Length: 305
Image (cartoon, rainbow, N blue to C red; front, side):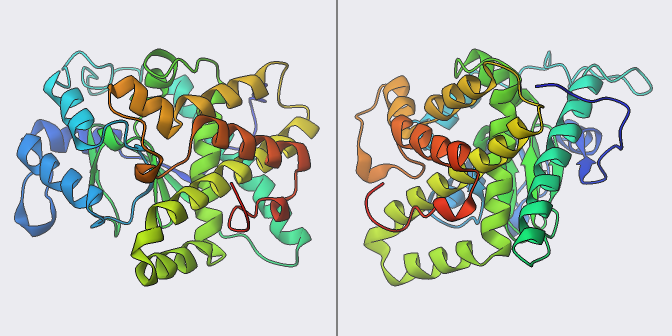
């Protein structure tokens, strides 16, 4: 991607890395019910999320579920992580990454503002919260970094631990600067679903038809992939994308497919447990949005997916 430096800096990014780093360093963050952070508190938070007690959208798609997340935690969140070793007053080692996130978020949201204006509406911009290790959201409870990037409908905010951007290239084998841009665009896609009423309608349907809850979740996630593709289409027309960027986006979509994550976790591939869709489904719907540039083409709730 071509970053045009020297422009306005997004006010939509709120940097809470130091705040959350300090909270973890003091022995844990406060959790609902009076529990503390740390291993025991995080386990409780993860169980609540996996049992439906959380409104987090996006996040880990369940590459083995709780066992995988706890497995990562068992390996330890090492104090050598770049942000953990930050010294007060020292230069931010991730300053360039933060600038890049601000730029990408602005481009995504400017694109949606134009889309809404064209349709006669007004786009309400989301916030993006940068955090480290774990964060108390503004209405969706506590979330550890292990859940991955996510969107909280209650406070209309995307949450991102920058360490995930490294994971994309290393663990998920999706390198390049457009892969994480796709992830941010996907989470902003959830924001679009939230402010247009799609998310609320899906939650209502899930409550009415519990047996179809997972399938509805997959359809919601695939629509967010398609909406990310719509942004990519507009960005390509603005000559910001470079050759190979779309391939990076497709690789990222495939990397976080439920079937691929289950295979990597060494568990049986079971479509009935999917919440985000297969690698092929995610690539297909991202491509649909990218080729059309039309949000109306992102109807994942009609027919087969």
